[in-house]
Length: 419
Image (cartoon, rainbow, N blue to C red; front, side, top):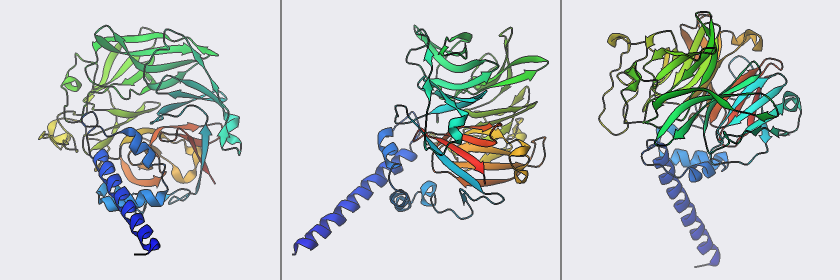
């Protein structure tokens, strides 16, 4: 046998083994419930650095419905094209230490973006940096007070007036508590407790969204809490003595709180526009939801869901309405790994009136949700716009009339502009 034939055979064997191992790892990773049998995040993260042709080949060969059409879906628009308008998608690189998963949140403050990383780091980026042609943007890091500078996770951030508010958890002896901290926006953030809840956390907390909201003539905050662990749903979302599985309203002056809505599994997005409150929520296996949140309404978890359990034979009722609960405005089946959302202002583009943008993690897509009118009671259609990365957060920058997204795999900023 010639040397060339031997090299050719060895190459083919290597390719088959590579694809076989990759398919096995990836197939198991994406179909294994979180918190139960985790596959190394390092492997899956490195996978997404491969060229698209390699990724798509692996996904198609895997035969999994969730991946077999990811890079070549019929009727899914790939930027910069959408059905009605053309968008320009720019990527800006942020020079900080990258992690396996680069979760961060975006806030607009005067002439700046404030970046809040989940690992408790805070950065400032001038808006003028986003207008430059340079792919790499300059940023400065905020110092934070030592008492807050411990190994903690940040679940969301909010700029209100001249202060930044963050949701987090803190361990006290044998009890972890859900807390909100605030600090004046200065060169150094001196975080102090704004609100600490007495109830101990008994389940992992991944996201807790926070938004400013005026309710009954009181200025306050809306905060989401969750109570879901895949196939181990708790009873707290239906228990009025618990803060978990709820959306809470907190009076910003008195710091007293009340349950605004309940029956939530894992709210990943929250947006407020005047008296309109929209939320997105992870279902179990399927059933990610877009909800319009109204005071004292019950959204049904863990009794009803359009998803189903992963492995255990847990049966969720399907119809929310027939069982006395609020129906979602829309449920994604299968799930998209739904995350944050915004309602777009009319001035962004005349073709996109009464629209919301909903981001996704596993779907790596932005969904333009067209509503019937400004009551946001009825969805007419949903347009899929493929980005190619997990998107953790999204903000509209009024001054520049463009949209900024937090790209979680690379830790970059994405910018969507009208052509």
